[in-house]
Image (cartoon, rainbow over all chains, first blue to last red; front, top):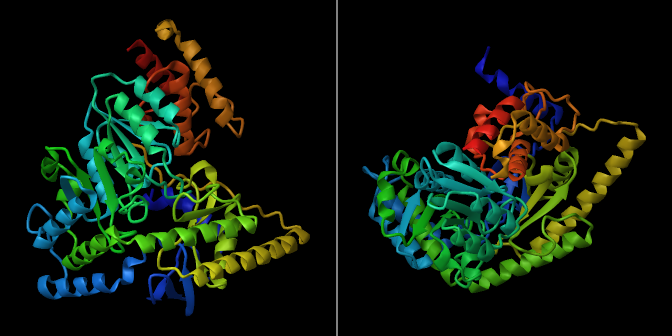
Amino acid sequence: MDLLDKFDPLIAERDRMGYRDPDPLNIVMDEVLSATEAMINGRKIILAGTNNYMGMTFDPDAISAAKEALDKFGTGTTGSRILNGTYQGHKALERELEDFYGMDHAMVFSTGYQANLGMISTLAGRGDYVIIDADSHASIYDACAMGNADILRFRHNSVEDLEKRLKRLPENAAKLVVLEGVYSMLGDRAPLAELIAVSKAAGAQVLVDEAHSMGFCGETGRGVAQELGVEDQVDFIVGTFSKSVGTVGGFCLSNHPKFDVLRFACRPYMFTASLPPSVVASAISSIRSLKNAHNKRAHLWANVERLHSGLKDLGFKLGTKSVESPIVAVCFDSQEELFGMCQLLLAEGVYVNVARPPATPMGIYLLRCSLGAGHSVEQVDQILAAFKAAQEKFSASETLRDAAGDKNAADRQSPDAAVATG
Amino acid sequence: MSDMGLSKDVIYGRICQLIEPFNKKSVPLTPQTTFANDLDFDSLTVMDLVAAIEDEFDIVLPLNMLPDLETIQQVTDAVEKIIKG
């Protein structure tokens, strides 16, 4: 018995998808030209699926701050935050986050994934309860698998279902309800005010992940909780630097007076190297500029409205009826259609994400577009034109295949590789 | 608390009824039927089934118990234990 034999179904599925050039699951960017364009396979491609919401990856201030930190502090810290990996920049970044969110305590992690993994698995221990949304990000599911708490799951965005499940729990038990401002697959928002209200009524503490809402939701870009005016009800905010902030890293904020003790209890914080000084410096620079980026926010929302209504006009089935976030998810019924469309879009010069079960809810196959403030109106129109052309070419090829009597409906739910529950 | 007196057979029968809507391949159900291999359920389907079981019996069946619950019999025993407290 070989250890990797268990992955044979996954290998078989990859093989069955056939060789595609370029392979949607193996895209290599040879050169990145800007926040919205890269060279892929020798061609200039518009990036419409990189979650680069505020277009900060090539921000001149962020780049010069990073270069200066590189010269002054070197390429890396070679150590954990609790040993030799805390530089003045890491503390300055935490102060910057506290200022941005108007909260008392910030803790910076090396990735957003680790922020969720660490916070949830550490906050809730044996005998405590973690209650998560069914559509939660993998980092939340993995945090549940890592910790010792009892894990409950409520129907996606259902206030009633959450309330029902909370009511079954012992009154005195500690409870953590984990929510996301925007869910990354379909790009839909959580009814945070209602979900938080039933959580608080049940005596639960609340963690909100604003990974896909920081930068452009709320008056100063803090996320959906700010936009809905419920920030004072949120006990822990988790977020990432790898989307609107344009670099990499994760964070958690809280007003809890005992928050700082988590630095000595949270293993994904303690047992990994801290962020390199250049990353820290660009994060500080970008967070500072996001606060007042009102014009960028307005441009981003206008872009998304244009793409959403354009795709709807072309007859595509979208993840949300109206614009809820910069994520516009185009839904397909089969993997063949998904990969076919992704490949045709690349041929038309547009990159979008492919997402499939079990990462997606309800067995949906998604082409996930995400726009940024860096996209021009012309680029949005080019993305729409590419969708139109790809759609026409795909239906033409379908007609050909049907005519040839090819009933190769090679479409099955993927092997269960990605979702762990513990 | 009226469920306190449910017999194991009744619990087993109700769980089988809850499984049926997810049993797309109409696999015959026995106490030894496994969710992953026999029924070919992925983890999302299993979690949806857990929610249905929780609602049917008005209990809390935490997801972290799932790795130990491979067969219908094992789920039946776990539900009985939870009901009896």
